[in-house]
Image (cartoon, rainbow, N blue to C red):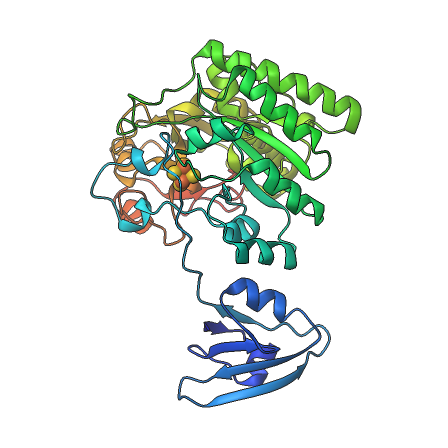
Length: 425
Ligand code: SF4
């Protein structure tokens, strides 16, 4: 059973009288467990829908969907699948105590992998899940592979029961599914020859493995430093050299780059980023693959839509790691808008100064960095530091930050989204 949370006015759901709280029981006699059942079973033109209204009345509809009319029904979010692993580099272990409860949930959910592109390890799949993935053709899936050697992967995931990921991918690929894959690089464990083998095994799959990204392990002051460490510059260079050999091979044989290093990997290796055309369709940009090149492209493409910011001073707040790459983005942005940009690298006051990515910055750190900045006309903060409820990691709200800052504050994902309307003052 799945509950309706909202119904759009011009929709089939509204015509049927579905409402907030309606229980969706079955479609064609099959029980509705979650949004996947709902979306896939009601995708047919004809189906039988059995519901229970909030007043207890049960109704069965024999539906013939009029062409072009959407169901228009939002349903409750799924109960998140908990992770079966205990990776030494787990983000959850790197959290300080006292944050909101939801941040401590280790999720590993193939449904969210399909729907939102969250990476999943597939180590907690039950036979029923495997059947659903195949039946509903959940493709592409985003899979954390890390290593294809099953023994090393089990060690990395700290899960002696983790199934062989190659066998899992092979089964799904035989049903036509495809995958975006990632490797979190843990030095001394899955770099070197292990990385070579993993890239080789994934490449040998052919078209089912759409691409592979390699992301350096990221730790905080609270992580298990006795068990895991971040890669050195030399280790990042060695990894890039292996990745780029596979990229060159893929470009020669398949016409795509296929294997990518995260921007962070290039930064730590002190090597220049590949040019924009090497990132194929920027399919893993949300995983930090090609973010700088993608931002540069967005500025170029959105140029006409930008407001006139001539004579204005705009503060750009970001994590320390991105700050060193940010000038490559702010130079073209200054040219496109006429504004002067002031890069403000923000130290993470919650996780410690070693945590340098923008997405983990707490509201208090932005507040501190903006104190007294009356010289600015506008301050941009990274949109990824906020969740969907507009909360920072430390539970400060965006509205709180805006109310207490001496300058207008706008969250931004790619700059041009926040610079298309002039400053309010
Ligand atoms: S797979 Fe590893 S890193 Fe991801 S949530 Fe589970 S324990 Fe944490």
